[in-house]
Image (tube, rainbow, N blue to C red; front, side, top):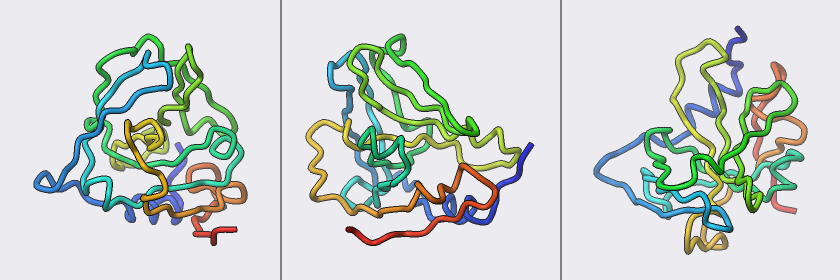
Length: 162
């Protein structure tokens, strides 16, 4: 099994710690409503940094990601409507709605890398009901050139807004 590289460790270390005294719960769904779930975030959404990656799949799907703990996402409806897509080194499992095609989250599958890391999901913030994207703190990353979970030479670097 591969080991995490320095960029991957730095990315994981940069994620906020979960504080049960400072949370917010958000209803989310795909476009057609076949998949419905809630996400508990800590810190609350207004204090989260949202990731915008320039890699091809994130760009084409319009992803904006948060990384809550897996246990903090609860599917209430539509588990059977979730389908998966993988590409490249197959380290990410992209989950989407089979009915409307909405990209709802990705599973980093970090346990395959052979290290103990937080059990996270990359949740597409655009699926949260009532979210105002323009009010979010968005960090842009050059995932097209280097994404922290794709290759051994990958490094995380923040880019400026064009």
